Amino acid sequence: MTEAWQHFAAALLAGDERQAYTILIEDTRPSIRVYKEIITPAMYDIGEKWLRNEITVADEHLATSVCDFALAQYTFQFKQRNRRSEKKAMFLCLEDEQHVIGSKMIAALFEENHWQVRHLGPNLPLSDALKSAEQWHPDVIGLSAAIPYRITALKEYIAAFEQLSWEPQILVGGRVVAMHDLRAYCGRQTRVIYNLDEVSAWLDEKTEAPADGVR
Amino acid sequence: MVSGKFLPLPYFLLDEELGILDYSRSASDIFLIGDNFITLVDEESRQKVSQYIQPDFSEIEIELNMKTKYDPLAVFGISVKWEGNKAHILCVEKTKEVDNLSGQLIKLRSRLSDTDFELLEKKEELEDAIERIHKLSGPFIPLYAEAGLVPLFGDLQADKLRVIEENILYRIDEGDYEQVFFDFHAVGEITDEGKKQLGQLFETIQLMGTKTMIVGLSPSQVRGFKSKGTVKAPSMASLKQAISEYIKKQNHK
Ligand code: B12
Image 1 (cartoon, each protein chain N blue to C red):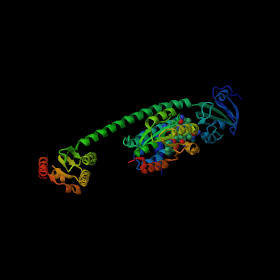
Image 2: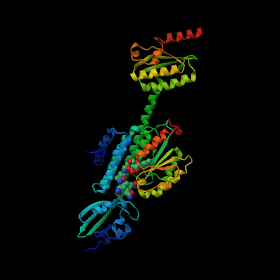
Image 3: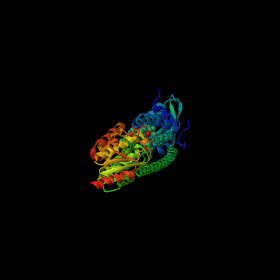
Image 4: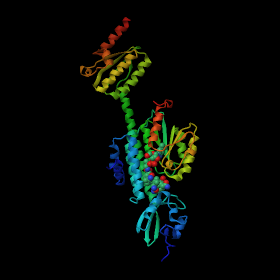
């Protein structure tokens, strides 16, 4: 049987954004499973196809931008600025990091769970990230890194955010966390997250905790 | 055999184990060259090297991420041609091309998210406007110190009533009212969910110790009003009558 993620990957490579979006929106699974069981495996498959010499980096680029587009449309239904919510979460990719699809899905999950969310995008220099944080005072700062060369930068980001006066919770995710043990760089406020289920468990925990001032 | 020393591109001559036998000047300009070609390749591209750079593929083109002196992850197009047990390898850097493409896509993406955001803003403006309209469809008007009037307007659906309810309950709680008149003269249709919601509203108000009086509900609207809250609320045909009765009673106190 062909799985939904295979159809999705095929639509991405065909550059068929309408089809890609239709596959997502017509799927009856809850969003977290759409992310976990369709989008994530499709993107890994694109990576595998490059390794098998079936596609080029250029194909990969086009496929990802179709994915990005379909994801943006799919998550639009959860977009709400949740202005009455007291919980704020900010997401970003480290400087030079372009692999942004993962953290976008995480941001959408937070939004769906009624957090105020800002995704500052890929490739965000630390100084800009700090400025945004100072202005907005998020309760959660989510960092994403895919390439191991970013580990030095990741340490700096974590250390800098841990200095912020209101002590935000820092979540670290992305491909590197599965490749390197980062816990040594993480203080009390920082938590490494390995997959979508952990994100969802973390969100549930926060929603249940009454001390948060959450309705 | 002609040497590749002066080829204007990075060139390598490899043995079967990918040991480097010879290379061009351009290759040493860009790469830190060791004994084996594999050390120039990013760890996560190496499986591709062992799979495709081997005599079974006598002529092949692949892409690899390679470690140059300037960039640990530069994208290269690699052309391979085997001559007996030796491979000729030509490397063409694609990083710039790829960066250009990705620049264009990034631009597209940010334009997209701008439109996204504008749409969202419009959506929220609309929602705000609807909420304001909902609120105006059931204003709370204090008549006397102990009596208030809620004239309802338009069709009544559950979501509209939820907005109205919030305001009314707040005002009643604040003002210590004894009686509230609900005037239905300007009401069109009431959905089933709306009827349920209204019943609950009346019940809540009654629980707060305030009487509810329904005015001007037409017989066709009454159908389906079976909830406790509605049944307990007396009704009258006209507002004028209802209010004058109320005043009479007050004067007799
Ligand atoms: C798509 C892709 C791209 C796209 C990215 C576009 C985009 N908008 O994201 C494009 C084409 C631009 C790209 C570019 C490059 N890429 Co690329 N790319 C990939 C690919 C195929 C898939 C990545 C992906 O989207 N995965 C799916 C997502 C959903 O998974 P994820 O990011 O891990 O996220 C999950 C979790 O980690 C978690 N998570 C992620 N972030 C966060 C954050 C928080 C707070 C939390 C809680 C959780 C969390 O949530 C997700 C849950 O499913 C991978 C292959 C692979 N195996 O990963 C290569 C890969 C990562 N890329 C690679 C490389 C080398 C590059 C380039 C350097 C060169 C090139 N090939 O073009 C450039 C450089 C980009 C840069 N400067 O960062 C290499 C990295 C090798 C290495 N040594 O690290 C890989 C492994 C391919 C390979 N085998 O060579 N790439």
